[in-house]
Image 1 (cartoon, rainbow, N blue to C red):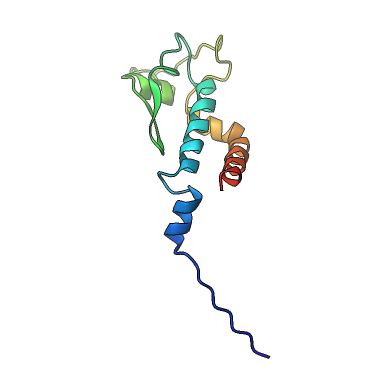
Image 2 (cartoon, rainbow, N blue to C red):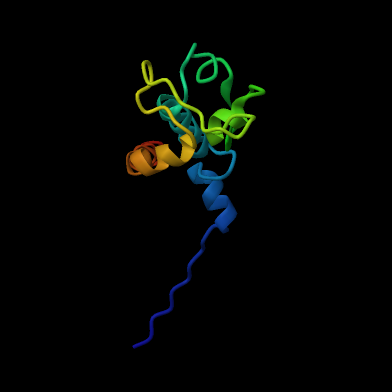
Amino acid sequence: MRVKVDANLMPPKEVIAKLGVSEKGHVQQYLTDRVLFRMRRYMPWLTGMTATSLTMATSPTTITVNAPYAQYLYNGVSKSGKPLEYTHTENPLAGPFWDRTLAQNEGATIAQEVTDYARMTK
C-alpha cells in the first residue's frame, strides 16, 4: 500500500521569526537580559559604577561596558601588565572574563531559563 503525504511547511526563516529566536527576537532579548543580570555578580565592584551604570545591553545580542578601563578589568591585567587584584567585598565572585566565568558556572541554569521562557511565550 502506498501513502502520499503532502507537507506544507513554513520556510525556516519564518519559523525562527515566529518562535522569537532570531537575532532580534524576544527570546534572544530575554537571553541577553538574563546574561546581563547574572554577569554583574562576576564583575569588579569597587563603587558599583562599572557593573551597573556603565554596563548595558546595546542590542539584542550585545552587552557593552562603556568605560575606558573596561578592557583592563575584563582581562585582569593593568596597563603596566601586572595582574589585577579584585576586591571581593561586594562581589565575592569578581574576577576577569566575566562572561566566560558566568557561562561555566551558570550556563545550564540560563539555558533552562531561556528554554522555559521560549516554551511559555510560544
